[in-house]
Length: 109
Image 1 (cartoon, rainbow, N blue to C red):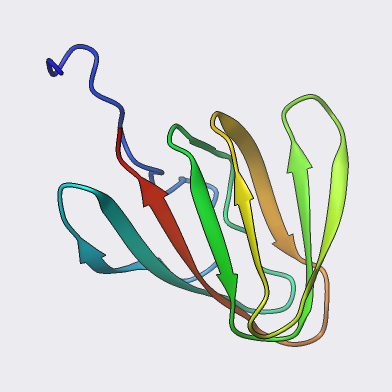
Image 2 (tube, rainbow, N blue to C red):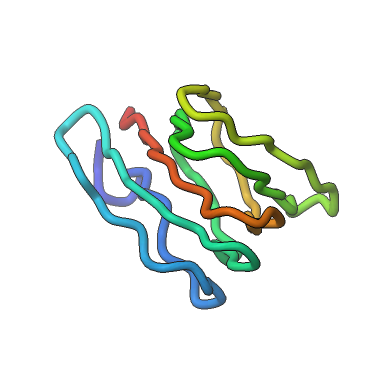
């Protein structure tokens, strides 16, 4: 894959109010990040350009606002997972009253 066609990884967003995510692992196959989003904080608008899986560590409610104008609430329960097919453009907001904690694994192609 040339650099002109290489997919990039989910960037930090300028309108992010949550603490920066932390890359805890990266190799030629995947990239794993850890994130904490406090009540009322948001990830900022960003696009996932790679398929990814979310592993939920905490309990809470995260609301994703999507580029098409729709929104969806995600109820976090420790130990649950979900997978998503790229591209996904959204802004995730912690609309609950507890910290949202999780891991995200992006799969390189």
